Image (cartoon, rainbow, N blue to C red; front, side, top):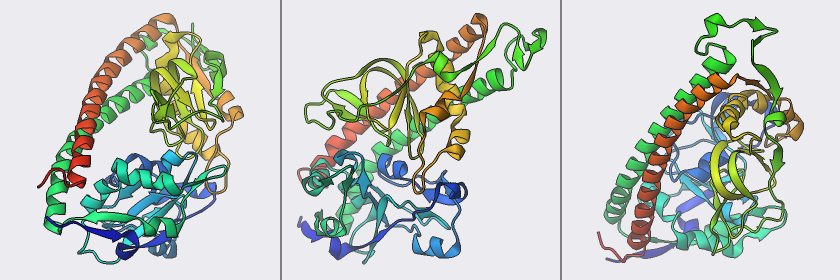
Length: 384
């Protein structure tokens, strides 16, 4: 089977994204964020991020089937050139200014599902590192992007390759949906018990100054120190062993670690993603790490931070990208329950977390299997 080498410039035209002040985000129309591009091979069916955009902006920064979105600037070279492809049209949607949109010149030459997988292969990803420029941030120039070549088999072969890989992604997506449902259930439980104060036995407990008797309301920093990651962290090494969290919140590898604990990890800019992580890891300077003084407070801390995300997002500063400050985190108040209620909450959360860990292990196995196949299929080693 003959595969042709084609420059991206022959297949796509490039356009920059929408840049607006922080006050325009959080309401309005669908918006494709940096982290969504970074964390997905293909755009999800529904865009949950919102921006206030007008008709002209929606036309200039539209998202149509076949569009390829590429991260154009990032904190590390490993985050540069991450791609995400649209498999359908997204009416009224726009995309962020920290990505570039590649719009197909000829829709009949390359299949969106195929290019979505191809641009995530280790070989193709490595080409981005070869020309990335590092100042304070890595950056990507149009001429560098369009000068890259891709290997294209006939369209029918592209379809077969994409269909094989898609089976693994469907398994991954199903497990991710189950994780999301478990997370949402735990978050609702937190809100019911610690925000609405409908915890077990609440009918027999007096509320004094807005707090159940025997409880206290404390600042977040009294539960866990607020620590930022490292500016000069040694990340992206080929021999890296430990997860390294950046604001994109998809960990890469670091050869050493700064933390070894149960921790809540919060992206300090962008979408303010929150993760619960146990073990050895590093974190970049624009991330916040909370490891509670008392390990029994880890779930309380995790869901309290997540519960405050909307308020934090609205109060964050930044013209084109939002930033959190330590002062804003200091002001988060957490309801500290008595030992019996906390113990009951932890038991339920541990069950949820165990299920989540099993699902994540299944996702990892499916990803590893997909990626092994990806390399072999895209190199032509395996024929279809």
